[in-house]
Length: 304
Length: 245
Image 1: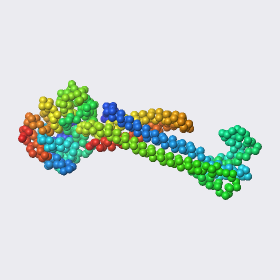
Image 2: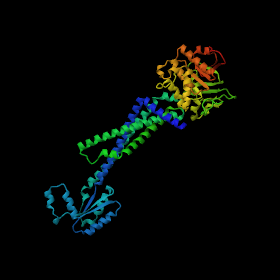
Image 3: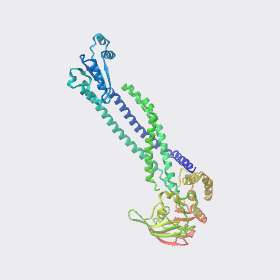
Image 4: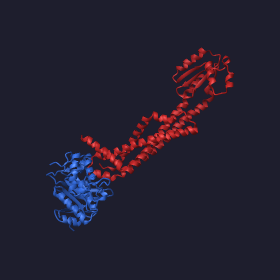
């Protein structure tokens, strides 16, 4: 019973202080909102970047085209062997009929498409191989580049664009690295700002702390209302930050669509799909930052 | 006899072996070789009214900081109710403070709280029950004559009224000891007299009062025990009488 009364008083004291120190509370809430917006934007940006890079990487595959002299049974045998490999995701056998149907779907002139008839189909049969990691494409390519395959193969698709694949992979590694570094830098700046802001809100109320100690306020009564205030900053900041992120990402998406014709990635859907994770992440991050800075500041100004 | 609050963990009751407050060979040094107090000793019995006098820098405020356990002596001991207060654990300090009311020259009131709220605040943060708060606040306001100013904010009060709020807050836990550090320093003579009269009234009900001041007229008029400090040394301790030379 006494515990409940005490808890009620601590919460009310914290809420009353939040309301009465309106200006300080507003500044701290806005700074916390900015911190959460910065941190969450970079986390979401990195997630999207990784996702876009993965989509691009997943499009990388390798096609091995066989000469007509190789029997279908032999090709299927290679397909079975490749499927058994740990680094291979899928192996699709494309016979002449399938190759022709794919050819017909190509965005080329109909006159050219009509030159190729089923009865004189010159398109080679092939195995379309997708590896678990695009980095392993080169290993598969090397496997088919041995002398044993020299007379059997027409050509290997990646041979021509290996350089482009390597560049794409290097670029994805570089973008991830730079993205993480820039995010880390901004997160550190945001953390320094919010920690200082919370320290200032407590510094500005040294007199209140002094009076509390003077009248014999217990340990919990001095510290916990400040923590309640911090929780208030975080809850309000999470609401503000989430709203700003939704509006911001909607604007970014419409600009990306308008100027860059990027339609593959639905940012708004991404945010809606991860709404609970987003809110939970912001609450936890905000609570961690604000509670640590509040405790640090109180330790500095309290003698008991 | 137990002190007022049943939840107390630090009793402040005079023991037969020592006076209620016993300062024994206390020295307080600060960084830079400053000696604020130099081996002073005195004892104060329950119910006494003691004026701690001396010019600025004599060490009066240091004595008060030591008595409320804001600081601890560099050498020597201070016993309150036969307990060496340097041994009070950090978590026990709030309970100890509730047994000692303190009044300061600058009042130390919370400006964004009304008169009543300043007093309620002191009770709330020291875990008094709702019933206790409801009973005590009007009584205390009545005692200091501020019942009609209960809902006013400190900024709208005169200096004397603010000091009375500060005294009311100090008395809210029914302390055994009331320490007043220059309580009349910011007040005109008439208002200062009111405050001193209030302190004497509190003393007459059994509370030990320690008044730190350099106001000669007030000390002469009180005509009670005077402890005189100068440059950190105790130079005079007279059982009755005025400020002296």
